[in-house]
Image (cartoon, rainbow, N blue to C red; front, side):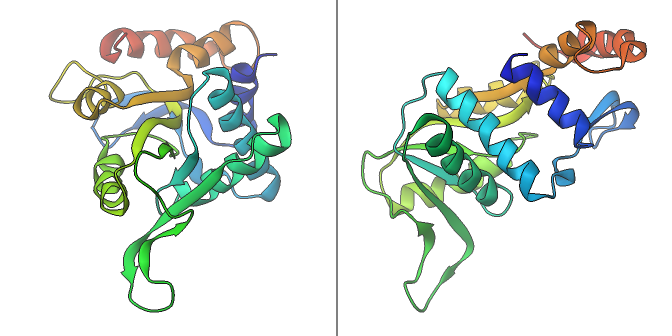
Amino acid sequence: MTYKEGFVKFMVDSGVLTFGEFTLKSGRKSPYFMNSGNYNTGAQLAKLGEFYAECIHDNGIEFETLFGPAYKGIPLAVATATALYNKFGIDVNYSFDRKEAKDHGEGGVIVGKQLADREKVVIIEDVMTSGKALREVLPKLKAAADVDVTAMVIQCDRMEKGLQTDLSAVQEVSREFGIKIYSIVNINDIIEAIENGVIEGKEHLEAMKAYRRQYGVE
């Protein structure tokens, strides 16, 4: 089983990926839904970090520091840094931001590795819906130092058109900021996992493919 197949199965086993009929915030009726809030155990977090580490290692992403935007990105960055060391022997820095600057103690907005000019940074997030998180965190990073954000890694790319454009959120953000967005898996990987029997759900295949045809991007 590839790490991508393993991750799709992991999402299903964790109750994060479910199938049926779901009304999204966009108003679209989706045959599948992902709720990363259902990761809630130490074992799940450790495994999740391993999948992020696999994605980073598999794609040969160059970086020095992992950055986890508050709040969801914080445990993800920590778990990924730990997995990179335990699985691949790669020791990297990690840092994260505060929602509000601290005016006492060490102060500032950035916690963990204090960033330096030209430092290569990878942002770790759970999902990308509109790119709002990246738009909020980039000014904080640039205010701390003139860092080089080499990539952003998320769990799953729905590869779905926006409401006002034929580009997906990932494509829009990548074009706007010139940052490569990597995902552990995408919707095609989920469909293939069902077809290959990695997970159950063949009764949802036609709905999944129809949704992909209607709203999908390449």
